[in-house]
Every structure is written in C-alpha cells, then in structure tokens.
Length: 100
Image (cartoon, rainbow, N blue to C red; front, side, top):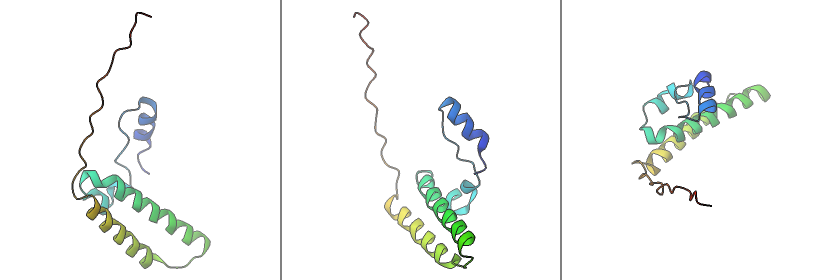
C-alpha cells in the first residue's frame, strides 16, 4: 500500500522490493530493527485485512481483540528474532563449458 511506483519498478527490473508504503510507516514496523520489519509488516497487514472483513461483514467492534493479538504477535517476533540471521553465502559461480 502506498508504494505503487516502487512496486512496478521492482516487477520490471527485479531489484529490491519496495519498503516505503503506508504499512511500513506504522510505528511497530518503522521502529523495529530492519531484520524484523518484514515479519512485523506481514503481521500488521494480516490484522488490517481481518479488521476490514469484520467491519464489512459484521459491523462488530473487535478492535481491542485484534490489537491484543497484534501486540502478542509482535512480541513473539521480537523474542524469536533478537538478532539478524547470518547471511548464507551463495556458491561460487561456475562458467559453463563452451567447448561442447
């Protein structure tokens, strides 16, 4: 949401995916360490989607439940990923044999 130009540039060129949309500006995501941002953004997007469905179909106010479950999920992510995962090196590139 909010990063359409960057998304289409990513789809066209294959370079880095966009990380500057509306969801990434939320304080939970924006203040998180960079290795946790994607996971927290997905959790937030999930809760936003559920909230939209509840609002459309039932008109019930379940915001406090959703907020509590989001807070719980964010804490789980922070506990599970306190440090960045080590980078895995790609195997060296082998040039194809052109003698065939």
